[in-house]
Amino acid sequence: MKVSFFSSVFYLAQAPGGWPAASTGYSPQDARRSMLTALEQFRLADEVGFDWVTVAEHHYGPMGLTPNPMVFAGALTQVVKRARIALLGPNVPILNPVRVAEEFAMLDTLTDGRLIAGMMRGTPNEYVTYNTNPSESRAIFEEAVVLIRRAWTETQPFGWEGRHFQFRSISIWPRPVQQPHPPIFISGSSPESAAFAARNHISLGLAVTTVPQAAKSVALYREAAREAGWTPQPDNILYRLSFHVADSDGQARADLDDSARLPQRMSPVLANPALEAAVAATGYYGSDLTKQRARVLLSHGVDERIAAGQILIGSAETVQSQIRDIADKLGAGVLDLVPAFQSGEPTFRSIRLFGEKVRPHLRHL
Amino acid sequence: MTGEAFEERFVDADGFRLRYVEAGRGPPLVCLHGGGGLRLAPAHDLLAKNHRVIAFEMPGFGASPENRRSASTEDLGRSMNAAVAALALERYSIMGTSFGSKVALWMAIERPEAVESIVLISPAAIREQQGPVPTHVAPEEAAKLLYAHPERQPKSPPPPRELVAKHAALTSRLLGPGRDAPFEARLAKLPHPVLALFGTADRVTPPEGAHLFREILPHCHIVLVYDAAHAIDADRPEALASVVGDFLARQDRFLVRETSGLIHP
Image (tube, rainbow over all chains, first blue to last red; front, side, top):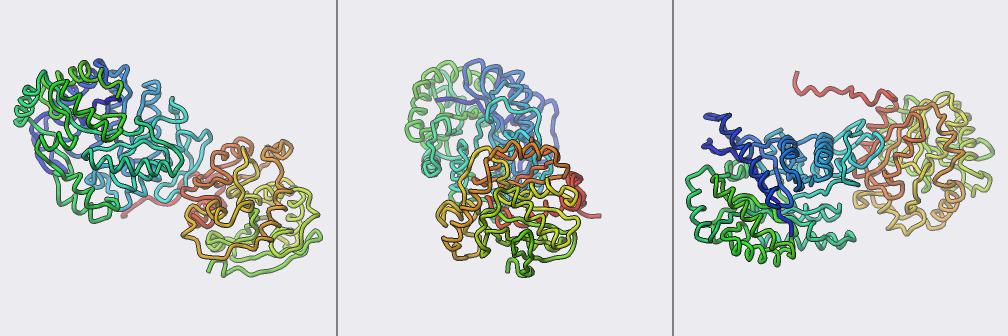
């Protein structure tokens, strides 16, 4: 089993709520400190043996200071020397897909082929960011993924006559190092996404979910892949959850309790329920609308979250057994781990403990 | 109804009696069908809004007598040039689909001065490897090769089996190898602007082979039509008519966008 260290690079200071968030009281020094802290954590994760590091795309709020994860990943290429760099965004339906293909190819070149190319639809609020109709987002997304792959592999300049994109000449430079192209991950929370991923031989990422719900998506994915004539391997399935490792279970819980007074990573979906409802009304969610909305809106106590496989927390030994339980139920080969909270030294220690005391026991999983 | 504006006519040329259908006014566009024979699609209706569209049925296809005389696509190209001459067309563009793309290219090689520009749709003229052929498989499988979304196509009975067999025999005999050195040597000197369209979901002439056209033809543009299979004219008619219309009007300059992006003045 592989593990990735994910940071959304959130703003480590008090900030206004809601989405979009006003920038009243915004401090450039705090923003810079937040970015440098994230870079330091990524550097540490690489040093202590995480297989990948992950960045994502979020706009207009303190939840993530990486509206363009490509830019942050550019900085990471100079800090992360060994691990693969996974980008889970970009949110391709709101971007120019040719530009996405170009930026990915730059990163694959800078890392000498260590890029993981995630292509996301984005959280529902992101459709306001650049004024995109959420009801068209799935069709735009699917076309963009096909176009990006084509831009990476086509050796002669070509035009594109799509439903949502039109280009008269595409010929990207630089080219990806990985051939025929870097591994692609898409988010597969809806049956439609899992089926699209399977049809196109694309890997599946599952986030903001529970192990039982993710297991259903994985089953759909495997079935659709079988129909498409291939068998997904563990490395084709990524599951994201939060983690905190301390020297003992008691210490881990105490760290968690302490963190309550600190700025928290707030989901932009929860930050503006009215907007989320408007997005839901456009048909943004797939055919299992109710289930998906419940998924993005969920919020539970820590014990429920442990039971649902949403958080790993405790000593190294406890976390190992929590992981074993998830691995058995899900068959995911990659765990994408986000710090359960940002509280300075305990968070750094958690990353180190995970790398040194948990990860060595995961190789056989 | 698809093709409603088209009128059926006949012309005698090179010893053949050729059926053709025609609609529209404007610069002439001579259309050569694929191995399945003459089949009008919504794209033809759209192109006929700005062009005089003349779609031939090549000898040996449809109800015409079996064609044993043409020995090659080069031969067939000569006959089609005679047909165009008999219609007194002086200058025109040619659009060749699949099998018809090779005939279209031979027409331009033989009479370069008469041809304005060349459009190739899902062209089979140069092939890296042989894909499945719609006329060689069962009707249901053929529909899946032709259309990315067969369920969206108007319901029609499959063509009679004898007709499909007749077309299959003729195209197999005439098409020639995927890589044809003497033909490619002639193509390398072709002065015309060429537009080659490939469907991203096409398995018959897959887009993976598109690069060959740009490598061999000196002035070729490739455009991939998203979510179209082999019959781009039926899967994405608006997309085909839009890009082909722009190319016919502006040739190489079609690379540069002319339409405004202004939202409000």
